[in-house]
Length: 357
Ligand SMILES: [Zn+2]
Image 1 (cartoon, rainbow, N blue to C red):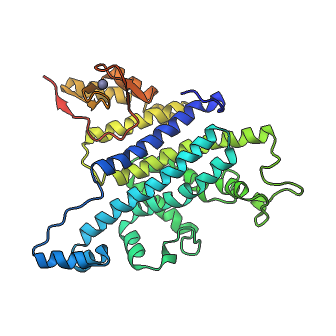
Image 2: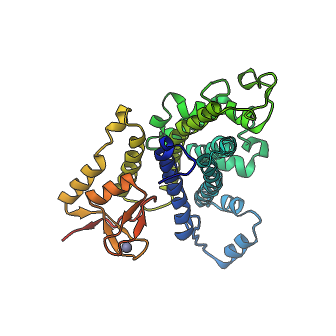
Image 3: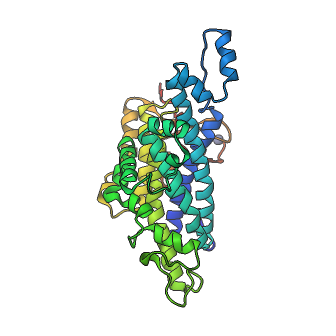
């Protein structure tokens, strides 16, 4: 993709960020299309149905009538998709501002989704039962992740660690707590906290770590070099954070859908191939290279092929090495049937794993 205002060196990273955004957006589209927040409950008698319909709080009624399991699952799915939708609204606007050079606005728009929404998502993944009980039956203060007395540094760290442990690669992407520190360490030069405070306020005096210099206003008189540094920093931290977000969201999402092990592996390898392209110098990432092709060849030997339905003509596109290569390097593949471009920024749950003749 070409960007008018964005320096060439960030294009690939911006493409990657839009890919992650689209995969997250696809989870939301699937939630709507497949009604992933809807549940069917069978009640024994008409009387119970009427009693349920009269209930003021559905979750409370279900809890009191021995349906806690269903209630928790409904709450978890509904809360996940709602938090994710709000997360995506902010991230999209932030990316849009970053690509157009509105750097302070781009940073400001990251604060809520990265500090708050993401922590709620992590909490939901780490301990859905605690989240549920606190949210439905606790005081509102107990749900406020911005309240540092309730959500202390250590508690946040525990939540993040537990969420990482339940995700596929969350722990590796947060190695040495790098993603955690980006978000919460106000003292670190690498933390976003400092930039968030400076981008939200013209003068900041309450912390030595991001105090406005005498005779200055935050960001207002910044010269070209300072702008470029902040722009550069945005594209340094955000790909790491968004790769991490995808891990957390995948763990929550796959709990709501039917997915085969092969599809799970395919999604993971595809996103890591894309991520690895941004970080050719990281050794663990170079190990991922070529893995997707190996899997496709391995399946092919067993006469199994992966297919996706073209969004334009509805015919199936077989994912061979050539198509996989296109998927890694672009957002689209050309459909061999209708020749139109088929968007591949998706979370694949229907690769129609089928035996070939
Ligand atoms: Zn087609």
